[in-house]
Length: 368
Image 1 (cartoon, rainbow, N blue to C red):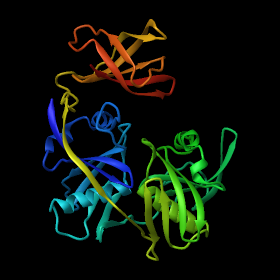
Image 2 (tube, one colour):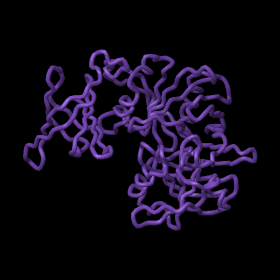
Image 3 (spheres, rainbow, N blue to C red):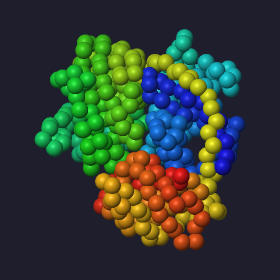
Image 4 (cartoon, one colour):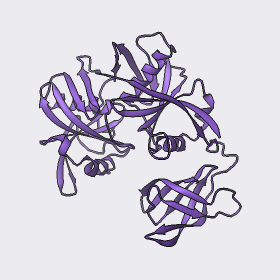
């Protein structure tokens, strides 16, 4: 068990757990996928859309690593980088007004803009193979027809360091069933790396409203790269000017697609609180205490007042929990009991995440 100091921050309600890995270098050696799943869980953890790791960089002022609530690492987050920049400035880690932050999407440059943060998001990527999207068409991909169940969409595909599918609606975004169609488009086969999905309504030549389904996080209050992609898509379609404001569930972002082809995003960053969380260090990459293993087990749980036992496969185990696969879908919050030969651990656990993986179901269990 180790102590991890963290800072909770948000950009328009898109919330983050920021961990300073310069002061806590041992954190980077943890199994970061599991760390993110545990800390981001809104019932059994701190609760957040993503974790942000502030790290040293050999090619920029700092490096930002980003992990979604489902444990997947992502290239870039516009709201996240504003929060990271505010954290750096507030703690005097740099006196520069314009920072260079290394990300998987390249070097991103946030700068002070009064009480807000302006970010040079770079140039939009329009080539389908670079987004990536499996569509054989010359760039840009505008209004590509996509049928999801019985509904027909027209998608505009853009990358701002991460993939986006932008959909313009003829109805108010507040009335649209984002949670129904968002995940279906996110995982559509034409997106080899999945995609973020934005649903947009044009209010005027200078103002849009949007909701976003983020890849790996679900619907969030705001998305900086998504708003940038929406701005580019609207301008490509001739719907808006190059300087616009976009209203999201958490508030407004200002987007400017400059003549130099760079997209600039301006918005707030807020620190909510600081804290310390106790986390099991057993999920280290070396796994010396509990090496990765696969074994068959039976788990028991109560269903409609009756005890039920099902077979499953334990694919990973640590001091704090384990991962399993089975043909049965477990529910988040469900309490189960089990026994694994030659492994000492509690005999009960709670399901903290569950998802379908091809023909089977996967679940993460936290020992209790």
